[in-house]
Image (tube, helix red, strand yellow):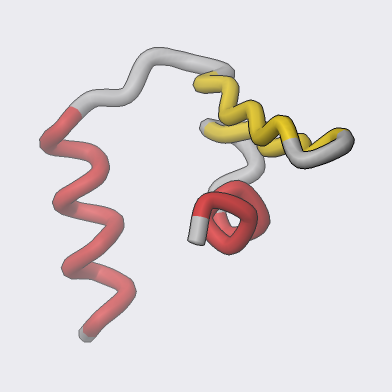
Length: 44
């Protein structure tokens, strides 16, 4: 799931899986209203 999210939102998330150690990095500040707007715009 994390890998899929990082592929869908590469400007916000970076995912790495090295030897079973999973790392998710947030690349820039996430604003809840932007996340909700993007989510609902994608569904319409």
